[in-house]
Image (tube, rainbow, N blue to C red):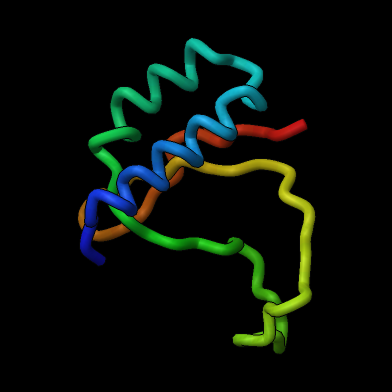
Length: 87
């Protein structure tokens, strides 16, 4: 994946929206400084869970998000760095 300026701007806008939901703002900012903002590597992960036989039939589907994760790529593998519970 490439990282055009519009994608970087979207990433930063998302971070701005989720920041208020984090329970530890100082830790959030520390992590964002280390692996967020300009250090962002484009990727998409919908869920760790197998959505069954949905395949590409996501239109009209919804699910509750209990947390989100920051991941770091090491030796070609995405590894969790921190989980941020929501709510």
